[in-house]
Image (cartoon, rainbow, N blue to C red; front, side, top):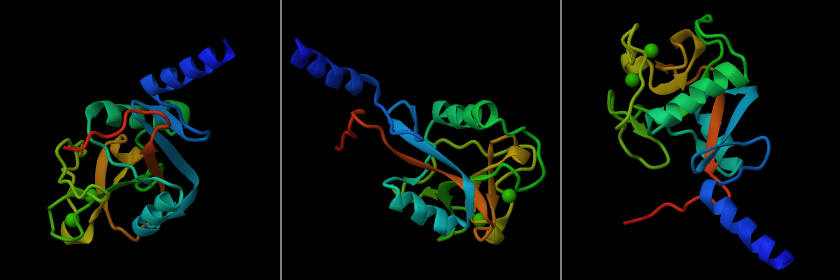
Length: 167
Ligand SMILES: [Ca+2]
Ligand SMILES: [Ca+2]
């Protein structure tokens, strides 16, 4: 019976996926909000790699909504703060070709986007080549100078989550 229960446990994790604390689960991914460390974009990329993941890549409205809700309701970061406050680097950049935004780990161009419309983001041209979420843009996306020091969010596949299906 114990063996049967253990087996069922494995099956159960396969349905939703679990994450090791302090990573938090959404769909088939785990997310780590790094709030006690501020790095430039490249260092944030490196840190997430060291931690076994990658700088978060947001590919759907559901994923964006989860991150936005988490920052607002779990981390209690008020929206509409000063520029740079409550900012988290995400894994998108146009540092290779201006205006050609892509996710770093997959090298896929942005399909879904959630740029902050009120200030017509991305608005920084060649000076702003890294994407982040920020309270000053209501946790939508802004392009910023890559050397700025922000918190960041890492993503990894959840434990027992559905594996990526490759062609
Ligand atoms: Ca740019
Ligand atoms: Ca901008």
